[in-house]
View 1 (cartoon, rainbow over the protein chains, first blue to last red):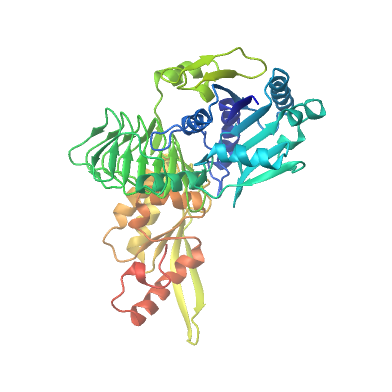
View 2 (cartoon, rainbow over the protein chains, first blue to last red):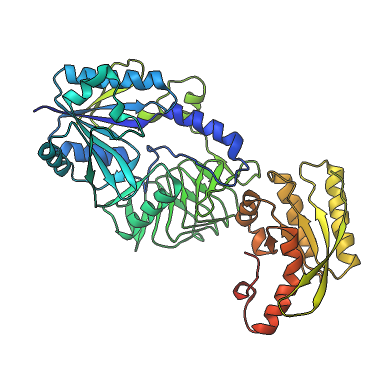
Length: 342
Length: 146
């Protein structure tokens, strides 16, 4: 039986729009529902790559990569599901569908075995907190109701068999669980390891990091590639400064994640927070502060980012794919699709 | 927004104790104010620090966000108040303002409260705690600002 695989990544454009909407309301918001891109690295790792590795172990030769439509984009959703139905018509008899919203150390072969044994048209992986975004669908389910696949839509359980996952899993779209994953990765509580060299006990650094002699790095901590930590700054414990960030003089970062291309001004105290460019989310209260407004931090615009802001294609979802992945671009329909050779 | 120091007098009733009166001078922070407004706050703060032994409370409740000018002005106020007898307290007014005060480390220099009432009650609470736990540090004392 031919098994196909599709990974849906929350679309960059969707996220940007959502983000822009939230910026207006959360610059002073007491509690945010801020959503982070699943393509943002975690300890330098790309969660998409961890899923593609798991799919490859199933013996699947290639997978389809697409951006998932936002919840309000019904037409986009219909188009997506009709494309999935099209895959079934082309001979895919079973489809593994991964919505890239969680990191889960899941044995996909076991999920497949469970699906076969239960003979349900749809099997969906869940843990104690709910859906993990991983489903298996048979071709009859894919072609059902003329492309109106209610089983894929949130809020309906019709025909779905839950696969109880009891292994390690974290949702990566929310700040708090991202930080929990960072802590677990740094302490070895999960299989994800920091991407870089261990330069001291429990201190990992990517390529080209620039650490001032007077900077204090307290493990467990990760400093991503090309990041700069200036004089008198303290990073750690339980901190992750992702690639191309700058932590300026005297600033302390602890129990926090700094997402790529972020600048932090001198003398700050970043504790139990997630910083993405100009926005800081407090992990305890969920409050979001605009650091740029207060002159305390900002995004560092790189050449690639500038290209996108001046009318480039919305490639955020597929950013970084191409070199070293064995990915081949494929034609686009109403939304971008890539066929990925594993 | 003009600067209008308000003398608050509140009666606080401690459990099983007699009525005590606590007072403080409240200065609304001039968010998004003109340079003149900022000068007025500076002047108001200095005069409040000179004029009384009661704590001076800078209130951010009307500020939706804090920008870099606000931070600069606040740091200047904190520097002016350093080492003086009347204490300066801050009322954050919102979680976001409190977050900015924490990120800039201002909250480690000056006690930050959620409301004016909390700030006005603080000296009394602190005095009670000093009697109850004479060796405890401020952070260990019950009723200390977070």
